[in-house]
Amino acid sequence: MNLSKTLPISIEFFPPKTPEGVEKLRLVRQKLYALQPEFCSVTFGAGGSTQEGTFAAVRDILAEGMNAASHLSCIGATRVTVREHLARLKEMGVRRLVALRGDLPSGYGTGGEFHYASDLVAYIRSETGDDFHIEVAAYPEVHPQAKSPGGDLQAFATKVAAGANSAITQYFYNADAYFRFVEDADALGVSVPIVPGIMPIASSTQLMRFSDACGAEIPRWIRLRLQSFGDDSASIHAFGLDVVTSLCEQLRAGGAPGLHFYSMNQSAAILEICARLNHQDRPEEGAAVELS
Ligand code: FAD
Image (cartoon, rainbow, N blue to C red; front, side):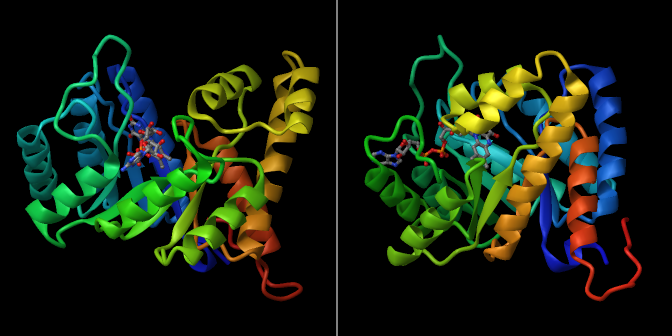
């Protein structure tokens, strides 16, 4: 049985910067399509440097017959540029957006006509009605710039009230933080699906660097184990697969509405994690396991 039939999955890519990267990503996507993702999304760099790459990757995914979601960030943007992006995405056939505030690269200042993702969501709805399914970001371990956990949760509820249909979380390795966040959001009257974001563990230093920047916590036991492997990438991969598969199992068992994989433009770890989940998903003893 295919995992995607019981638990929808989605997969996130970033736009490659070189022609070689574009070709490599094409091959990666072909492998991942075997998982029948509900949609594939492409990140969008605030400040403009990679935005054409986002549109190109989204166009490629659509041409490959898959549902594509474009991320769209608003920090530093004007209403006019956002309107142009929306018109372009609509014309390309995009029907799903991940609407974000974004983070400006240092040196860009803070200009622009939008302050928060909730402003962007409200603007998209006012400009395009129900043309797009809008996803927003959620932070079970609290956004790093939030003044308080309560304020961050309220900001999340405000984004949803502005017109979001569903949410994808920042990655985390502590399932309790996710379940608590979903419960707290529910208590505030937020009833949209909140899909956990899953970051496979590929490299210890890359993960530490990313997590520091985005405020995701690497539990002490995971950090120490990863550090103890040094340059032994085979052990890091094996440990990472165990940890992330077990996290996905907990999330599935606890009722998560889907899994959103941060692919980092790689396929191997996601394929292996889904194959393991697929295997555990067997409905009956002796039933054939369909891995594609
Ligand atoms: P917001 O929801 O606007 O929140 C930002 C901060 O402001 C939070 O601390 C919040 O608590 C606070 N806040 C919000 N509203 C208010 C208010 N009314 N009053 C006071 N405080 C408020 N970044 C990119 O550049 N490109 C991408 O493609 C991208 N994709 C992402 C996908 C996912 C699934 C996730 C989880 C993150 C992604 N990011 C991306 C990162 C994201 O842009 C950053 O985390 C950014 O710092 C916050 O964006 P946001 O949309 O969550 O902002």
